[in-house]
Image (tube, rainbow, N blue to C red; front, side):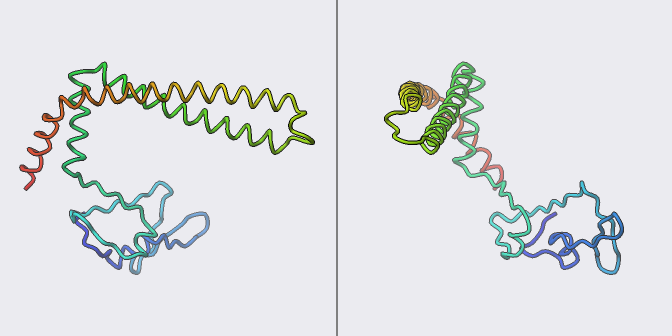
Length: 183
């Protein structure tokens, strides 16, 4: 807790995962003692520094998560919560649209992979391969259908965002209040 930009030397073997195998157990040496290291052991280190700069060897051996909140980021989060409270229909529709767009991307990627596989496995003249031509035609139709749905989803999302902007002042005030109280 409250770490500086360096890690105490005594913790270095734990951070760098320098373990010794003793029989069927793994141990870590802390100072002059050997401590059994359980598989479920996790070390969490926390700092109050707003933008810490750790040496490259520490960054390579750890996962650094920055939990600092920016005013704009908090405003957007609060905006989503206000819209979810005031207009749950819009929040639900936006969530559905995001999910739908992700499914469209997956569908297009699968089509592309299928086409590439069929083209790679085709033998002889590809114009004589009726199965391949039918697959290409089906893929084109599916792709066109998905593109139409993407355009519709983008238009709908733009309308939802436009309506959500009416609640932006509430999110901005909440964010401002948070940062005023923190200072």
